[in-house]
Length: 97
Image (cartoon, rainbow, N blue to C red; front, side, top):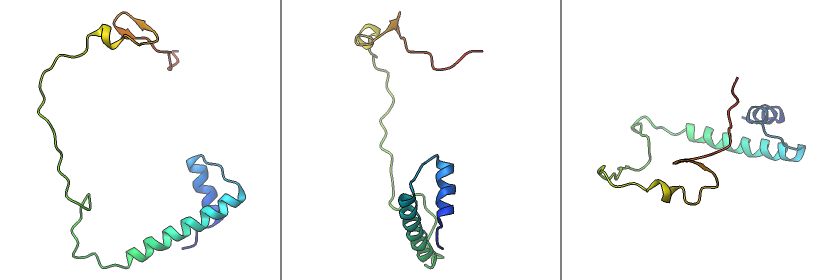
């Protein structure tokens, strides 16, 4: 499958990316090679391969939860640029109605 400049334009619009004409041509070529490789992989017989989430077995190493003392508020807020009582004070980012 050949990726066209129109395909690149469409994907760029969805991803909110801007490319100049040279970049679009290069991107179309790279994406075409990727799609060709995936098509080649699709030719493999994977009927005897079990579905898996990872190529290698994974095992989480988790520690037991244990109650430990946390930082003192004064120590935690020592380098805070602005604070209000025992809390960090940060600029408002949400607008209220």
